[in-house]
Length: 196
Image 1 (cartoon, one colour):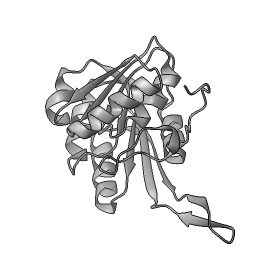
Image 2 (cartoon, helix red, strand yellow):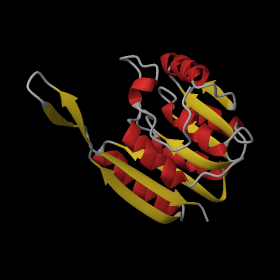
Image 3 (cartoon, helix red, strand yellow):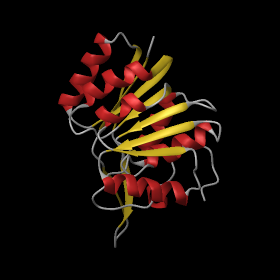
């Protein structure tokens, strides 16, 4: 069991599979901070993958809060359930299915994390905007330049404020037979914004 409240649980603490992505620990820590979560918040984790964001967010919002983790991939939802059990998190509802079909059935929310969405990020943001409370935060992790442009366009169209763009490039150490080397990870852009 993880005994700390600060975000950035080491990746190796999570159950993992090759077929399901994980938001890396340093990226996760930044995304959690950009959401500005409070105790008792309701949170969406769209494209939950391994469930690492759901686990970290649950630690921030406490038992009074609620998280809805959505993914279309049954491998992802099963892995999310395993990680929730491992970290003894019980305030997360895992929803399997297409986010564009499932979001309409979710309650109002204080924060939305959007990860892997299969190319329909713009549509998902538009749907989540209707579920996001005034003052609520949206946090989107992006790898593709095309997605970056699409997200910025829709946030401006929807009149979100406090739009922040942070590009993160991480180098992690790895032991070799002769010493320690640094290996670069793919850059990730995190866009966060506030609904007015």
